[in-house]
Image (cartoon, rainbow, N blue to C red):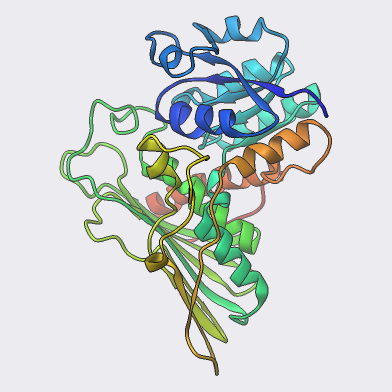
Length: 351
């Protein structure tokens, strides 16, 4: 068996703490070797056996680190990823990958030049609810998919103006925060969109960045994806609503992994990543009785396991660079569409 891949994580905010160090430490074949925390001792207390570096340069001095995770604020992703790629390290970047598609393209080309891997943390492909949706859509039970609706609704009445995501600086707002997840999931199912129409807005008094958005993607198959996120949903809508020519599937409730990890749970806990039965989706197909569909177990370690195997030359990367670039470009088109009030054609990413 090959040695464990040594991993360095840059940043120990919520992303670094919940979505990266915890998942890396729980993934067989990976070793959490270093955490970059510029000040404070939270990382040292959480991982007493792991080296705590005070700069990226200090972390990169350890040439045994083969994979670097960029979990810093969004406007720093490009520069931090570029620095690590230039040092010939494989790099995984938290979403959003970059703020602009030209930056995303440059990182991908740099990775090609250095012959290393670069990808984005599209962990919600490993949500149990999305895994279930993917199985149902690809089974053909619903017939040709006509409408695919996906929500990530939350409620926070007061803007957090001291938090970087809501302070008005670059990279803030929930389109950058949650848009990459819903756009990535829709395009995994249906491919490149033909066009994009979006409404990106500020709904809460005193907010200075977008806190609500609705996006419509049209696909060549005839499917329309309706994607939505808001911070004013005191009563959230369904997570997924899918209509096909032969039936429908509706799913309420959000994958539990994030909340369990925030509460101090771990991947070794019994039932981790499993939906309660009362949140299983309902499938209704023409000529058959309605039935509840058990939600597949979610497990974010699947993303890291795939990156591990790709670095080792044992697998093909699932979150491919061209898909990451596509998501970045679609977010740009969403803002353009919203500002101009019109539908915009998607022309691909390499033209």
